Image (cartoon, rainbow, N blue to C red; front, side, top):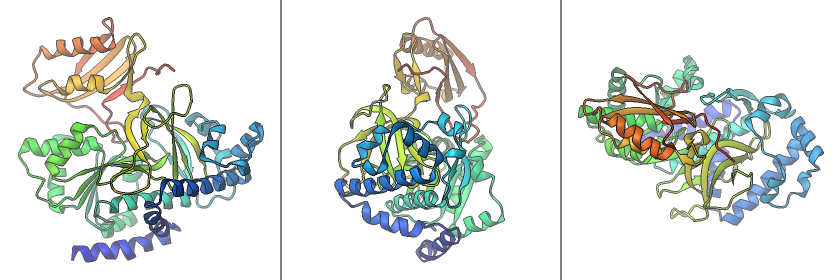
Length: 452
């Protein structure tokens, strides 16, 4: 009966829902399920064709790019390869803030205002049209089906974005009920709420989980501590996104829920960039997205080298994202996945630039250098590290019964080894550590600019 209902939703109800909204999601997904098996050369030809269309449309209909192309003498008709993108300057958050209206195409269809949460600064306001929505939903849908689940299978979403949680009106509630999607708010993760979440997951017995890795691993840890089994529910996959996925989180979720974890990478601004397949490859949505890795000198780096992820989204004619600096750090791979898909791979997603810390002598370290110190200490239940300056790093800790007072000296000693002997390490004990306003959780935040 479950399979019949899922088929009804996937083949009839959801396609009808998308058609009524003016989205081309179904046809885009079907095309993507063909092109995912194309060769790298075939995908590059497809992307080049779509890139030229995007650039020509930008010159014709987008005031910002019309002026920019004229100022630098850039002719989209002369674009003969994807590397020609490097002739264009980057699109930054500051540029978008300063030219929001000029970035809107005069022929855009159904532009909607969106914004990022602004957890690390001022929120970013931008616009998305129906083309972009259709392509992002289709890409996510395709990736969902890689794991043997589909729209209409029972799903629990553990989320905290005010955009999602603020639109739970009657229509959306009916839609979620028909699609068998249950939303659990990730804003408050108190012990009593965790108990409720566990009861709800056990009651619904979802085929898939979706949400922040921090929230899912916290629920898993709570169930484990309470001795409550969660691996007997028939969950087939746990999709995680919107935060860096750490190895210990993946292990905890897989162990407790008895299912694999599928990592996803993207953002409301940059789009649905990449998703993990059952063979472990982090596949870029190559039909829609061109990813460049850029070093501190703004030079495009080859596969295997870490740098900032820069995205060109080919389905953004209404409000173009061309060479958009995401602020995330990653590494491209030149290998192919065992699954046989031709979609290129992201080898690593290392986190945001603000997840990196700067030692007193200017050495740049990944936040993991500090995270591992705290993770290995007995009795440390939760923590958050904030580098206020090169001279001061603040550590917030929630402790359990096993925590030893001498651990405080261990933290200071190990942090000073990495950051510098003169750096002040301020340790503050908390009853609980709040997530960001969006519901996300960040283990490391640095307010120090990474030197170029």
